[in-house]
Image 1 (cartoon, rainbow, N blue to C red):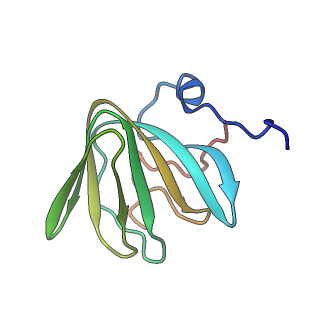
Image 2 (cartoon, rainbow, N blue to C red):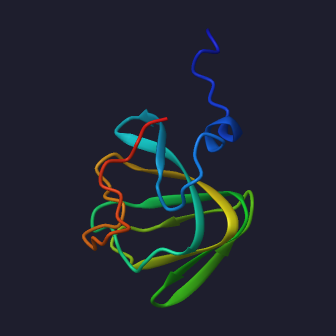
Length: 122
């Protein structure tokens, strides 16, 4: 077995600086693995048909939902269930690994100038 498929998350994070622009770093079984740098507030949105996994690598991420709030620190993860409206809010310097179906739209059906339509593979 070869080590050709090894992905160094820190090296990948060093390739970009922009926030709220997920980068695809891998795919498996119809799912995409993404990295993103986050800071501040994104927007309220939901994904009607897809669950979304957030794993905090650095910093702190609060996921506001209409009936509760979850704060994640490095090494912690949370899965936002499909259809649940959420608003991610991140401390400066936050980075996350995302795991979601390939068809998941960045901000669901709520599209603004911050929505990333074509996510880059790095």
